[in-house]
Image (cartoon, rainbow, N blue to C red; front, side, top):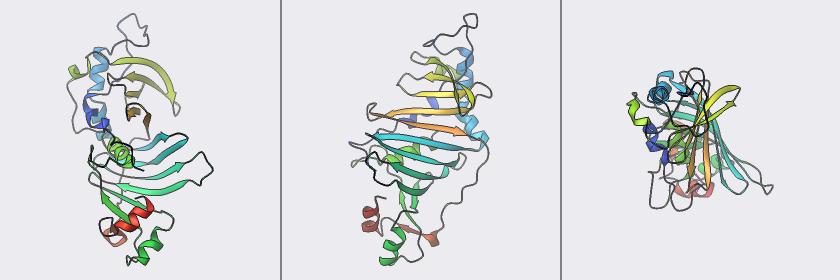
Length: 257
């Protein structure tokens, strides 16, 4: 799943981009499009750091990257180690069967397994008892384009910060309140950022519930929904069950890894 023209990884600027809260300086009445308040900016400055302190979360990512074609990842992440796992399912509008695979990721690498025909192809190529193919994550802006899977992994991993940021960073123009709605039965305040991204933050507890990033000049959105925040321990595939894409490139190419 490779995007056209190279996707720009918007998530790298997350630490200076999220907004949170729902207080108002106008008699408690809040209007859609109102700018972020000082109190919200203070909460904002710590929102990604809170993800790190919580330790991890369950997540669902949706990316409708082509007409009627949707990539969905359902899994969990350890924010402290930037490690995660998920089931990736691509659905199609033309009756084709779903493309389903298991992915693991770290800050540097991506593992892919449970692809129909993978174990047989690897066995035929001499990699016996191997269940996963591993490759480095593509760098943002790679000459041949950044795979959508890699963009999504970097976005999810980027929803964490080792420390809080200055509250003043979030008081600039373009950061606005967009109302409230329920996300997974939790009341959330919505905010639009100056570059078109949006976030939803729990009205109680100020935890990040959803992050939406437009990609390819707004052609489609990647939506990340977080839940069940708390410590996670991800067991990445071991070397004994992993082969590298660099060594088995023909197999990887035929399977779209």
